[in-house]
Amino acid sequence: QKEVEQDPGPLSVPEGAIVSLNCTYSNSAFQYFMWYRQYSRKGPELLMYTYSSGNKEDGRFTAQVDKSSKYISLFIRDSQPSDSATYLCVPDTDQAGTALIFGKGTTLSVSS
Amino acid sequence: EPEVTQTPSHQVTQMGQEVILRCVPISNHLYFYWYRQILGQKVEFLVSFYNNEISEKSEIFDDQFSVERPDGSNFTLKIRSTKLEDSAMYFCASSVGGGGGEKLFFGSGTQLSVL
Image (tube, rainbow over all chains, first blue to last red; front, side, top):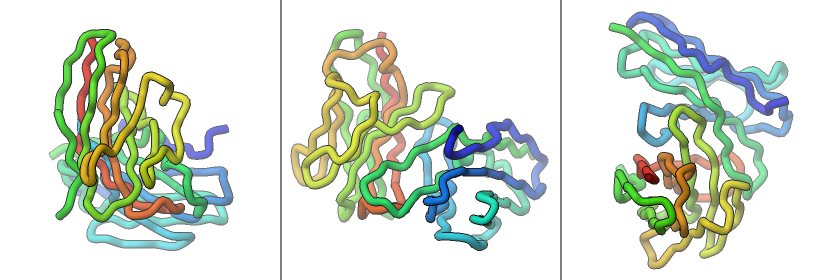
């Protein structure tokens, strides 16, 4: 069983829509929950960073972590064509010396 | 804003040739990484480097690969004898620390094409 499951999409929405990207995980040791965004042919960039359960908001983006159900969400309000990218859910433990492992992510396309 | 820079942006080489991919990590970062991404696939971890030695490597990082920090600013990935399957985008990343939950900062990548 994979440690992290994320629907690969593609997910296509019209401009202005609310987008919900979701991820489930199995490792109870995960304490840090990150969302990276990767534009085509570019390196991943850290978008949201959350420690433990709860919500975190940054502009149009909200990250939500529910450790009890091992469920992670990223909401994008008022989506823009510039949000078209692949979104990577990357949880991590607090153990030093282990590299971040990326899945394939969810590809989002926002049409104008 | 400080960023990770990679050169060249594109590299074309013949199978069997050696290539060196170069990276300048963010100046106050201590941990350095190489990842690669084959077209249409996920970003894969290759190696992490701290204090002038490899701290972790994946199965992909075999004897054909090596990393080096030749001076105080550059971090290089060498592929000794390239194969067709080494064609990929190679990303360098750096982080302040190496603990859990570290924020990685990635460069824009070097597209390696092996012919």
